[in-house]
Length: 114
Image (cartoon, rainbow, N blue to C red; front, side, top):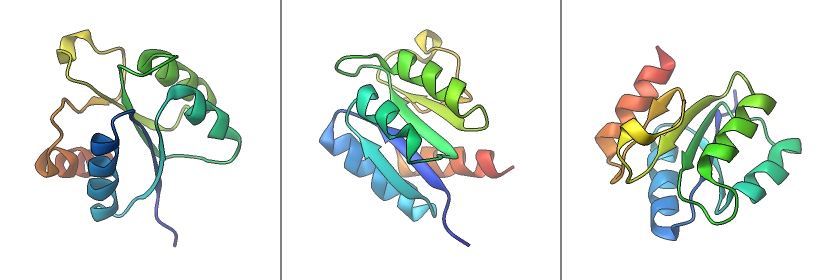
């Protein structure tokens, strides 16, 4: 059985590396992009079960990426990650405020499996 695929859309290389590390520890394969346009272009080749999207991205915003992802993959669990107040996040399945911690990622994945 192959590992589930997580899509990360994060323009910070440090944050992207951290998300990859934490997701791989939780048993996910990771497809990482630095912007929404690259994520959207990959839709024909990927089928993520989880997506973690930063709100502040160059070009298209994380909110726009989230909306397009929801249209293409309605079953995908969408998580918004940002330094902004979670009250300002667009509609999503969950929030992962920054700074992201190992404990917060584990709690998110356990909630996803439930």
